[in-house]
Image 1 (cartoon, rainbow over the protein chains, first blue to last red):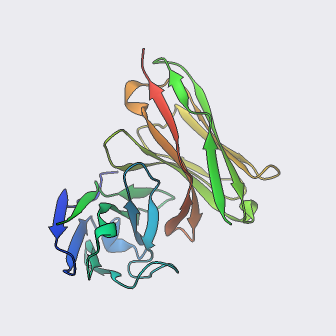
Image 2 (tube, rainbow over the protein chains, first blue to last red):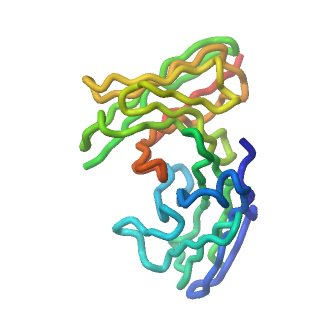
Length: 110
Length: 118
């Protein structure tokens, strides 16, 4: 159960777009449509932002979008806002009722 | 409102035991599978354990297998995690999460802090 690989940090200026990658294997990301993304502000519980690779729960701004190609999933945040500054985690179903998370990416809004 | 509230965390010595609880409300608890996820201080998220809606199936991360036991009481809308033989690296905030269609975790509880230290 190795963690998915995410960049430790990304940054962007307000209004810009950033993309966070999440690389796994054919046993998890590559073989599953159950890839999700979570936002976590300091001291808070994670919040679901994207599910099933590219679906947004109600209430999540359409500035957030997800995609997948092969063993790599991506979260793109467009029109960056100050409140987007947080840690972001990807997660994939890895089969037989097990899941694996990415190591997390710290987004800094400059 | 769908809500999960964890309790039972605290300070415990290495080798000790602790039982976490999670109270669910706002949804039909017995219809959903549930997980525990943890986060060590300053670290990322780690999936810990899964239980099916009827308690017929349980799975564990290799890091806790043989030491932790997940259970639930659908009559009381409650999820539990019995943690035995605790180690320093079990120190973390433990979150109770509802699993939706194998795919995603929503919502998350506020978490309960477990500190293993002598």
